Image (tube, rainbow, N blue to C red; front, top):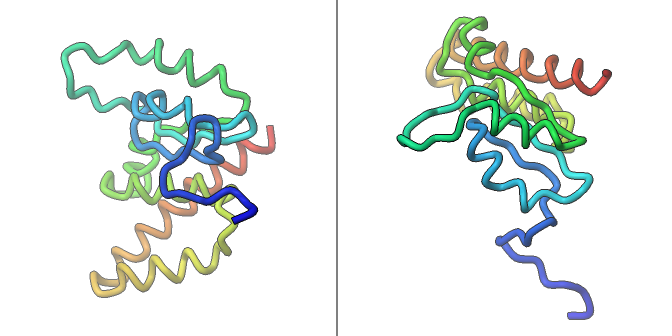
Length: 141
């Protein structure tokens, strides 16, 4: 090939977008982010090890990034009516960076969750919208 061969492994400094449900995991993968890359992360830690760093230390590093969306997906999910939709809040916050038609994402959610009933579909769509709106507000500032 006369062009670089793509791989499923991302090289250091080559990642365009990191999506993280946990801030320490975001921090762990920051070396892969390119200079113009975006981090979209939950601010709420999942403290599951005894030597988990203080959240302020983690956020101090994350705040050094010029391109970041930080949000408390757990809090937003609870406010939408179900803490279990935190992943949809985070997905919504990534929409400005995905290059995927928003309506297609909504259709996918309807298809995936449709068999669980309209209430499940609607709570997931509500969480998606909440995350998307937060990201759009952050991007406008």
